[in-house]
Every structure is written in structure tokens, then in C-alpha cells.
Length: 319
Image 1: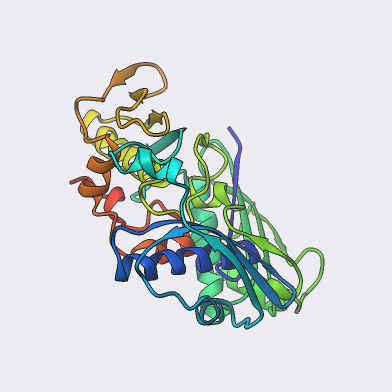
Image 2: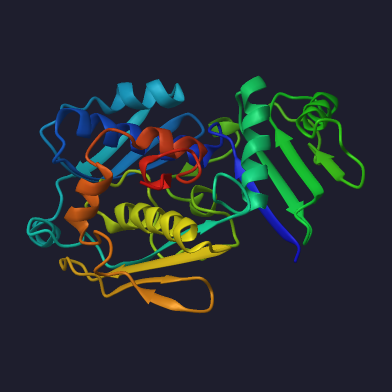
């Protein structure tokens, strides 16, 4: 089967917004681990707007945070406290929202992510280390996991330089690979200068690529009481453990919740053929997940740059 995945650099407008939201979250948790945060960022063309809900004892200077991450100093914000009606469900250990979260792991590489996704991220990171600007990569592989097509578009890099970087990343093994570098032409206007961004708009990139279904919402800007984030991380952890324990090729884990309720409506593990109830096997109540994965620490900014999975985070590790 032919498979394709893309990745975007931390300089992409949507990822800048993710990074701002998660930087605000981390600062809240540094000062007040009990912070409730759901912060959204929209930015572009010289300005940034923040909106959402934050209940915290932390002191926040939105202007300095935005400037630190993006370099932009024109900031507007409309942030209020978390709704009492949401808080009353979370306060008793219930889920901060409804949703179905999907965790995944496979045996295709030592990151336990789809190979096409791993390759797209690896190439994007390789180029970004040399040219830290807005950029995207995309890789197609065949049924033998061999690369057939590469697309790389990066700001402030000439087509010739970019082609050379791709060839270097391939270790000069380019036979049979079609390479497209800056196919629309070289570009110098990128990031917020060329486009607008929004928190959560690169959800597929943040997960596993298009091969794996996504059930929950976006991650960035949300504290771990939101099962969109915490349960998705736990589902990944369970998937890695079950993959290795059972010797599976692929593993899917599904956790679903009702807002305000702590017991999941579904907690199952599947290899694509059989389903296993894991509700009594792992900590799957929201507060149990937070404690088990130690999610009240300021760890989220790092997840907003290169994806949530396959980067050695606590939920990636079989322990």
C-alpha cells in the first residue's frame, strides 16, 4: 500500500500559534500546577490575538510571552476564567470534556510511529536545523516502505540548496525517488508575514499522520484535565506497552469519556482484528492518568514543536 505523510516546521504559522498557547500553559503550570487552561492563539501579519479560559494563580504577561515565541509585540487578548459549569465536573475528578481518544503504536521503527510520518518529520527536522524558518516536508513510501516521492518547501532556501540537503539526508541514495524542492519557486516571505495561523490546526501532524484516525480535539493550550490531551497521551502509552508485550505489528487504543464523569465509556485495545477491554488493566480515570504520567509539570512547549509521539516523552516509554 502506498502511504504519504507530511510534517511542518516550528516556524509554520499554525505551529507558532501552538507554541504560544503551550508556552502560556507551561508558565501557568510552573507557578500553579492546579491551573485550568484552555487558551487559543490566532496570529498573522504583524498581530496576535489570544482568547480562551484560564483559572490560575500564575502571573501572566501575555505580551512578553508572545514576543518571546514569535517576535510580535502587537497583542490583543480576551481571556476569562473557566466556566463554573465545566469546573464542577473536573473538580470531582471527572473528564474536562467528552471525546474519543485514539492511541497508536507500530513496529515499523524504534519510534513506534508510521514510517512515512517518521521520515517526513526526520527530513523536516534536518532542514530546520540548517534553516530555522517556515517549511514543510512530505514523503510517500511504497508497500516495501521505500521512499518514492519527496516534497520539501522551505523559506529562505534556494531550490539548489534544498535539493542538496534532501540528497544529504538520503545519504545520497536517490535512485528511484522523485524529488520536488520548492516546486512553486523559491520563497522569502513566510511565517506570519505570509499567512495566518491558528492553534490546533495541525492536529494530524501532532499525532501520527493520516494513517491513524483522530477522535479527540487538538492538544496545544490545554491543561491535562482536558482528556483531549491527557487521555490521548495515555492511549499512546498503552498502545506502546501492548504492542511490545503482545508482539503486535500495530496496536490501537480507544478511550472515550463523558464530560464530568471519571469512568471511561470505552477503554479498549485492538490489533485490527480483536478487541481487549483494558479498563481494569491501566489507570484510565482522568486524575489517575495525570498522576501516572506526571502531567502537571510544564512539559508542553516541547510537544508543540516536533509532535507528541516518538520523541521520548513519558507516554512514549514502555515502563
